[in-house]
Length: 158
Length: 117
Image 1 (cartoon, chains in turn cyan, green):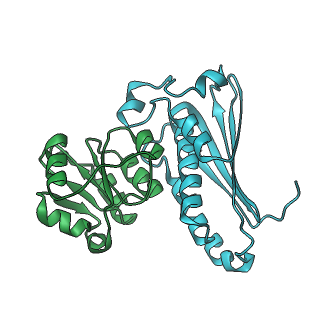
Image 2 (tube, chains in turn cyan, blue):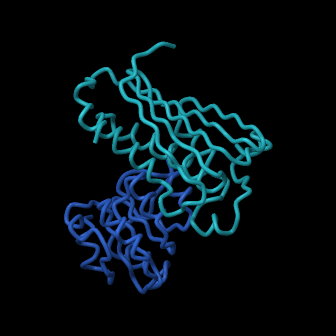
């Protein structure tokens, strides 16, 4: 699909940084609000991005999120360098988790992250290579036709 | 119900976000220590009652559009978490009450729990 990109920005995420974890998703949330997406769309994108970002924080060495907005969709690609997922089908199962006690003490690691991402996405693609890393592509269909590119420029650069 | 009215009726200390209290509307209450659960049933206007004190409660509040957070059992989030709440305009409150006791008090003043559709 060839579509005009309205907005594109990448965000770096550090593995193990539980204090700053979520910062990138909060930025994405703000950007989507500034681009005037409806609150329900912003919430879905924010939740999916946040769960994916916390997966980097919890399980990977480092990684990043890339937000791309086109006139008809929001795409968030979350890629990390890390251990990878041995069995994606198993990892997608509600309640399945390999989280440590430290992660569980933070209120995560209950095996709900990937199912939560799927629930909030219109399309979700996940691929992983053991010992290399994991890539999750989140697509949320949203008509962005009514927002003009120039309007979003000042926000995008702030 | 406004968050401001709740803090007048229930004994809580305001740690951050005091300026947001008057216009913050609470629709329902959720008592939860699992942030993924909060994210799973997220809808606007939830007041979160939790025993957690880390920075992720603030991030979750921002992402899930919560009205505010009450930390139970007299626990105090560290300075970093309080500062983050202030920066993100998230009302962060603390009470010496335990979770069930606080929830009973909130129910007495007419607040209801969050339901999954």
